[in-house]
Amino acid sequence: MSGKRVLVTRAKEQAKSLSVLIKNEGGIPIEIPLIAFQRPRNKEAFQHIERELETYDWIIFTSANGVRFFLESLQEQQIRSLPKVAVVGRKTEKALKGYGITPSLIPDKFVAESLADALLAEVSDGQRLLFARGNLSRPFLPRVFEERGFAVTELTVYETIIPKEAEHTLLDALQNESIDIFTFTSSSTVKHFHSLLANQSWSEWTKSAVFAYIGPIAANTAKEKGLPIHVVADPYTSEGLIDALSSYLKGGTLK
View (cartoon, rainbow, N blue to C red):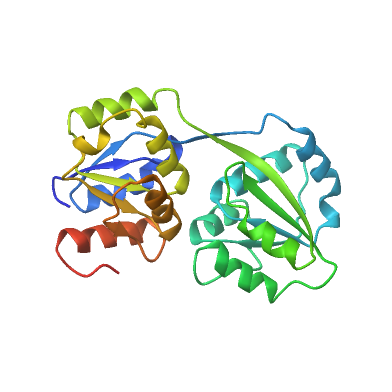
């Protein structure tokens, strides 16, 4: 990856960890956040859940952002106890432990489908499940449990938006052909990339570039949007993404 200019599309507050990994491989990270996060504008549902939290048996987080926005709100209300917690992925687990909480369940594979299988083996009939999610999160998990007859509540704890400066900065970088590798760490970054450049000839500016995705969900979104797919990480982590990129650039077999 030596000397390669690598686009980091993560939110500003989350970009540093990936940028450090890129630098460690000799790459040059170019941080252009294509996503940002904010609290939901409608707070009434959240306030209701806070009052009823003790009636739930499980709370499910699928992202570190879900953990952060949910627990920061609870801390403001001085609510300290939680139901059992299930999470997807080590980053989500790490975020949870940052608040002094250890999850009761984390699947081996860091995707919602694996969490569904693991959680179905743990929950009992009549239990209530709370899914703390972003406004653009996949509906897969809640639907699985609704179809099995569980009492499911979906709570939007954060909203994903496009930063105001993203379009100008991204377009400038592409027109100057200053990006060698594009990395996408979520479906939202893929969707925002496509949306921002919908009326531009971006494919002409990226013919020799490598497009890399943190896992199959982001890669499937890329396929739907017509983006190239050169690298798909496994495991679905930042470290896995860098390892897969390094193998690809060396002409090795992707992991």
